[in-house]
Amino acid sequence: MKLLIIRHGDPDYEIDSLTEKGWREAEYLSEKISKLDVKAFYVSPLGRARDTASCTLKKMKRSAVECQWLREFSVWIWRPDVQEKKMIAWDWLPQDWMQDERYYSYEKWHQTEIMKEGKVRQEYEWVTRNFDEVLKQHGYVREGRYYHVEESNNDIIVFFCHFGLSCVLLSHLMNVSPMVLWHQTCAAPTSVTTVVTEERREGIAQFRMTSFGDISHLYVHDEEPAFAARFCESYGNEGERRD
Image 1 (tube, one colour):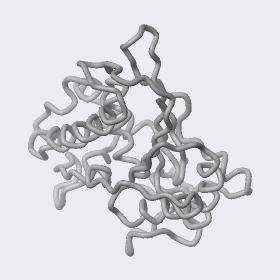
Image 2 (cartoon, rainbow, N blue to C red):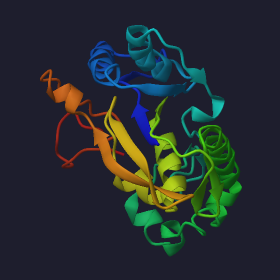
Image 3 (cartoon, rainbow, N blue to C red):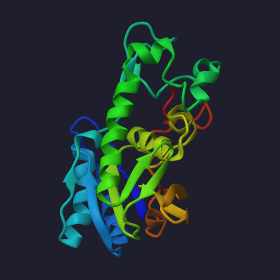
């Protein structure tokens, strides 16, 4: 089985939709995805994800299952350096979170007082439990850290969602801390991350990433990737987001 995890197009957060550029990106993405034999589509309930999916779904005359758990992973915590308001749980300064080795551990990243206070683990488990239910429907049942194969297949399953949420899904599939993925990867708008099953012994499967954040559909049209989710490459760069 092959999972395609797709981030929404360049967002207009004020209206929870896409910018003009984002709509172009979504159309270019649809040219790529519509050529595939997709078994099922799943989409976040948020407008920017639904709008991104709409171009592909319209072209293929298909529909998607809308899943509340695919919404952005918006859990809020008291970040150590910000006292006046809560911050998203996956947006920290490296000099803060990297000092605590627990954040690198799949078993311990959620055990710090900050994460406990924000009930981050509960949200993570809600998302991954629902994700596993979908995988079960398609023949793969979670057993510890790998999957028991009830119905081996080569189906393609597509998820239209968000960067923070996609890192949660990848964290679960690869058994790694989401903190590392949240802070040290960046998937551009409409990028496609591909994860496939490997069944090296009959009945036992793991998931393996074959590509992360693919935006070849943009380059084909000479469309530069959007900067959304990134911070400035160099602090003096004009027009690039700082903390």
